[in-house]
Length: 80
Image (cartoon, rainbow, N blue to C red; front, top):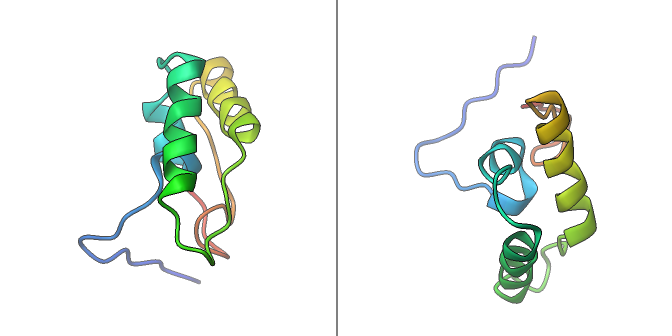
């Protein structure tokens, strides 16, 4: 059995994590696109860019289901 311990101070992208999608569920799509744009602008060169369409689709899943389950989205082999 795998146990994942997230160290204090760990950071996850608001626009690319299950908890972030949940927090953004009531935000206007334009506000979300702006957050994605800023996240991508501040990303390190080796960091994968976030697709605003995928982020909005995940947020829509939260709106419809009331939750979002991710498997390997942020950390390979882990879910949230």
